Length: 283
Length: 146
Ligand code: SF4
Image (tube, rainbow over all chains, first blue to last red; front, top):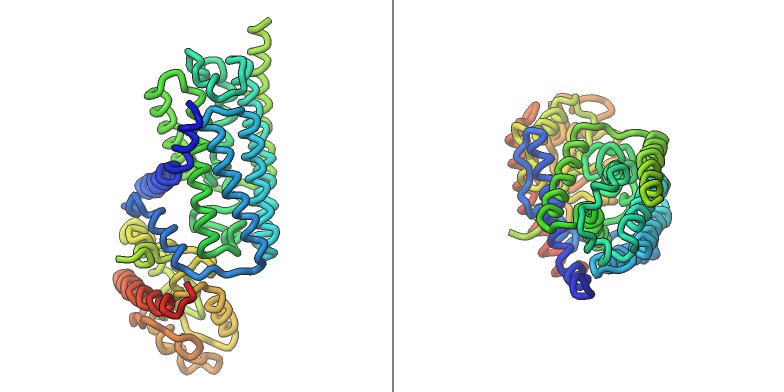
């Protein structure tokens, strides 16, 4: 892992992320007994969005989304070049903040409520992600992704609770049921389209590509739990993704209180117990 | 085939239909017909939509709503009048409050007759609409606004 893989991420993550998004739609359709769109459908969608008119409510709303995009690429690039996990999480949070700000700025009631929910979602997943980073540090003795990945045994063996907490918040990051409160890829949406309601054309395409980067990056964190063997890691990442889709299709959206409460309880109980166990093991 | 025709996002608005046509529109999304095979997404958001799919006739009350939705859609866009109510007013034509079909307020691109329309004809209409979308796209580009 070096700056080389960071550049590879910047160049190829959109392709990988787009295919992940396509797989998502295809598998979801199969789970619902439909045939589903072609695998490359997300690329057609984004290609189309670039051909459409971009409606503007306020000029600055686009600026926020551009920041969101840049920070998303930045945090993923640091992660994949083996940088500091804490810095990665911080940059990732900043990206989320700009995404929410963009929604606030567009000043429509739908995107406004969507942005509020986005902030609540960030509050929900943050503890689990931070605790996972702390747990990885306690096991491997480093916050550097490059060091964590060299650890000879699968981290999951020592971090099962933290992995559970991480898996629990994955639907938030993938914008899937039961936690797709801020915006959703499915037709069911009481907020029109939530946070992205007021975005169209080019900017919407940019948001979509940023989400592809996000997919690859978030699955990359999942990979860390199994990183001792490359093939095992990749296989497990696929399994995680598949499980996520099953959960998505089997659940309905919950209220934000339930999301925040359950995400924190799982993070603090499962993750907290896990960390106490690690401290106890170290003596 | 251009990108536009591979990913038509549809917004469905129910004017004053009897709901017969709307059920057929939803049937087109269901496993038997599954229009998502062609990349069709039923979005609830005019700003993300390429195709405005209207069922039911136009009356005084929904006229501003229909216009509002249409005006919020980004170019290029296409309007489908689905069901005989939407094409001409249908059996509600004589009602005191009904203005008539969608073409009384909007430029309609594809008329789809039927009471209720069959899902097959809706899919057919979307495919026709997509062709018109590409033509409009070319005109839009020529006008130098893309
Ligand atoms: S065309 Fe027939 S089925 Fe469709 S809305 Fe009109 S009356 Fe109902």
